[in-house]
Length: 333
Image 1 (cartoon, helix red, strand yellow):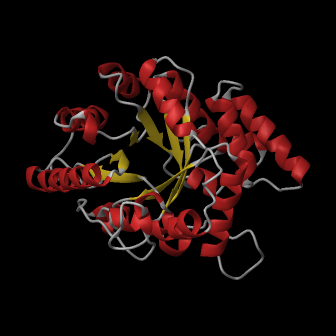
Image 2 (tube, one colour):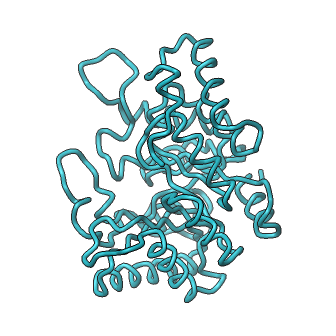
């Protein structure tokens, strides 16, 4: 079955003004947040967070729903769902794995790695993503995921940034040889060594200079970056229409925060949204994703989507985490 991601990427590259918009559910949090990755437990318990089983059940349900284009997972989750259970075989959803885990994403509550300049690192390998083993035959490579998220964080330090770029170069070459696609996540500087006067411009410059040295064979399928607002989004989208720009969700915020971020990024040239905590911590993930899709397809505007989302929660008998009035607030712009 042809994947919706592949169709949309073709359409967007052929027409940058296309209405096509990619949604990814970023459920790779077990590689960053530890035991908090499944989100707050919905079951009565003295334990705050859910389990790995809960987390994977949510992945299964969202893949079955079929409204997202990508399910982003850790390689261990992908081994279970992609290789062993084969849940993507008859689905339009593309399985993807986190291909590297730089030190700044190690966000467990007991650590402060995120306060230190990012260091490149990869827990997994391309082979383990493709077939679950350290060595794959050509036939086995198609059993698992053929798409991975590679992240990089620039911190305005020549030595650290050079090391990060070198690690990315090595990954790209290996991925090209092994027939593995990737999308590129570029974070805002997490611990800049030197002051940065204009962080959005700095990130845009880092992206464009990095990709200026990469041919089509090694380029990312699309980008995942913080949403810095209309000006920065327009600047990057206008610079090179062959770069498909997507946003990351960041912290949960209000429902209006999530809905407006997607809607506004699309308005100013974005074509993808990759939401992790915003989906994971919602009251009802399937309903939340349904409204993300309505917004992405231009069927509704953010404020009305919040109101309708609360209406759906009421029909389901689910108590919202915030009152409608509070959830209509925009707090992350």
